[in-house]
Image (tube, rainbow, N blue to C red):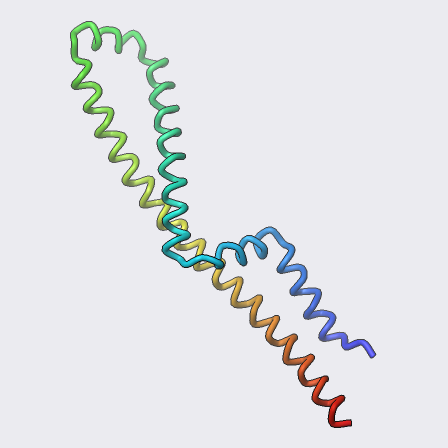
Length: 137
């Protein structure tokens, strides 16, 4: 005879496992939290660098006439120094935001994984109870 509660549990587990968030949560929790955060910060470094470079290029295109005057007065080193300082400040804040977001996401995935494992454990206990009941009969 089919146990309807067990079918519901298996269906719920299958939906959790196949959903985008469920599958991703299980993969995220395979590593330690610090490793996941470091990987996300490294990705953030490259993404932040590309974003800053794109912003600077667009800004150059916007203020090209003014920049010609700066370069004509030989203030290039001062301009380069200010740009590098701004890049450093931007990167510090961006990487801090990446680390915080990665930590919060890891905790969320850990909670989802614990719910999944709890449901899986409940299903396993249901099978064990049925197996014991069959052995007693």
